[in-house]
Length: 429
Image 1 (cartoon, rainbow, N blue to C red):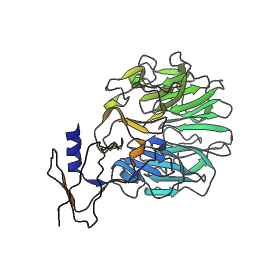
Image 2 (image 1 turned 180 degrees about the horizontal axis):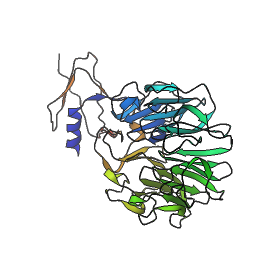
Image 3 (image 1 turned 45 degrees about the horizontal axis):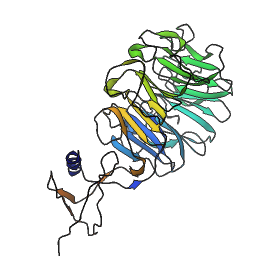
Image 4 (image 1 turned 45 degrees about the vertical axis):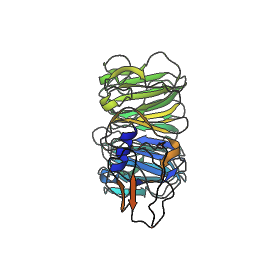
């Protein structure tokens, strides 16, 4: 292990400042991941086509990079080729691809840096999906913008795209919303469940397969706590801790033990201790009240984090940890937070969306240390060289800098300090 670490460092010499900041929230998109640290700064990593990371470039990033200098970010949601975020002052911001108006700025021009959407400062909740978004304001009104053709997932009664946020209906008692690529789910303050958009696989869970371009109530229950929209399936939690699912069930993503589609919301197992849920294109993740993490469905490149690439038709425990507090899935990768706000990630890594400095997928959670998170992306140290390459015991560092090197600290790509005795010998002059 030590030899492998040393070789890795010899090939890539970087400068990276270190801080004790950890993550307030993280959001996995299709090709990228966004996160907000506890100090309110915004970060992104992974695919960066059309500037979806918001760092002013279109270059993929395999490490988290800081987006701008603002430290008042409150909420972020990573979509397919764009991202949206809220600041603590209630303003709404967006960046990335804008071919369907998903940035909400009245244009179809992509942006590689965050831009403010309108002037309103009363946004309370946001949810981004592939090419559209849903949001709720402080007054309980519901809004949507972006792609709406074919499925009517914005819920405004039309099949036209919208390049600015538009109010959906006149109700002002919306509590929660989850935007999906083809259908949307939401909960009102009275605990009732509503859905709209595509229902070809029974993802509404209301006993039929009829789609709707306006919100319709699902059943009569008024004890729903959270509901999430995947591509063709829905998962939801009730206030009593029971877990429910409906829709397309290829790969067992509903967690019901088979691969048969279900058009009625069906309880998953018999447990009453589910605490939070996450949803991907073709999988489901859930956390119990004891902090254990569970997953089912499609398992491409280790998406479920159980060390295999075999689909699971029932919720299967991920590892043995009991300190998980959040987990969610993009398209083929998952990110999660533990009780100390440290991040873990696993699954596909083609674009660097796991943020560990590589493009290699991980079939098990990669755990990131809070105490050694970099404050910026790694920058190559100019005119600085390490030799010989590879080395076994002695390593020479040569630099054109006139600054005297007082100490050397070596970290691996996960941010963990390489513990080894180290002595600096300077040549006499």
